Amino acid sequence: MPKGKLFEPSTELLRKVGWTADGLNEKSRKLVITNEKARLNFIITKTADVPTYVEYGAADIGIIGKDVIAESEKNIYELLDLGFGKCHLMMAVPKEKKRPHFEDYAHTRVATKFPNIAEKFFTERGMQMEYIKLNGSIELGPIVGLSESIVDIVETGTTLRENNLEEIISIMDSTARLIVNRVSYKLKYPRIDNLVTDLKILLKSV
Ligand code: PRP
Image (tube, rainbow, N blue to C red; front, side):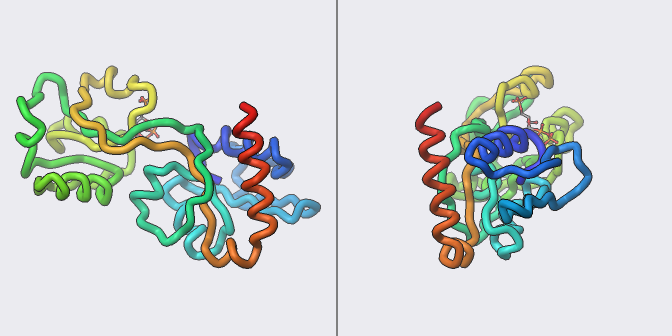
């Protein structure tokens, strides 16, 4: 389970198909929450680490945004688009320093939590950039002169607006996905497949 914005809708969705446990809430400092009767362990971790736990099989399945999956470049299966957690990854710059063309940003510095996606995106467009990896509050980068631009997530647009930044190009759309470890998917196929079927039915009915 990912901490942060996806935690609540993820636990709520799983609860509706009977996958839950007493004490499963984000405020808990307990990192593994067990429902012995249902033979379930919920592992609670930082969003960026969810694909890692699943790739190594420490978790059989996980819920995480498409953006984080793409950035992690982990060897996992993506089973289902869960629909919530809608956002998009984009490039933004301070309004007052906007350059006439997107290409004018070649060879400038980009602050981002998503250097792999950003590098792929700019390289495909023939642009060499300098990537500065940040772990949060990315919007601060160009405001204090750390970078010319950012590559970051936009959900409501509030953070961009409040910091006088303007989106100049969209990079990818994202929603929450159900992911699975490749070996677990074979060994625990009936149980995982039942979960996927139940989730599909539930998602169609909303
Ligand atoms: C994310 C993202 C933006 C913000 C976008 O940050 O990095 O800063 O949400 O949302 P909005 O368009 O609705 O304003 P998050 O809240 O996850 O925290 P972070 O800054 O620590 O990454």
